[in-house]
Image (tube, rainbow, N blue to C red; front, side):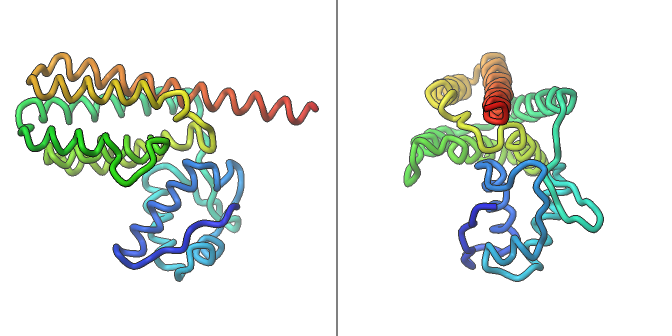
Amino acid sequence: MSSLPSLVRSESLAQQAWHTIRRAIRDGKLARGQFFSETTLAESLGVSRTPVREALLNLFRDGVVEIVPKRGYRLVELDDEAISEIRLLRVALEQLVVARLCETATPADIRELRTILKGKGRSQEDMYTIDEAFHIRMAELARLFHIRRELLGVRGKMYLIASGTRVTALRNEKVVAEHAELLDALEARDCRRARRVVTEHVERSVDAFVAARDQLRQQERLQRLA
């Protein structure tokens, strides 16, 4: 397991641990099939086991990690049926958000969302972070806080699909254009268009994650044969 950044105390340590472990999964620092423990992660993060345990239990509830008795934790393996369900769930949740925003979004809300998409203070290469901030803020502005929580869980499972791949290289420019089109539809109160755009956006993203996963698996097979 690659070293993880030590945590600071600007927010609860459990929250920080949760975010940091999710990023580690996303970036491939926690490998599939690898067992890891609260103790190992706590040492890497520079905190006690308590916040790490809370973070891992939340990831367990999200369906991102599983608990194996006497072995520790490991990442959940998603089959094609699970991925299909994730696709349906994410589309349904995002459609609920944009339907609400079509009715309630203010000009200030749209400006804020456009600012998020500029990625101020972040590298444009980190599309994962910008994309998540954008979609989660949409749910917050729509005041759909239970849906916000479900979206975070679904996104965590999406990170499992293509953990450690360079999926953003396949999607960066397209994601930017899709986000802009979605905001244009919301600003125009064109709910039908907004729902179509967000549906296509999610489906293309899931397709890209699966394609990146398959590409990585093919590379791993070739390396084993070499």
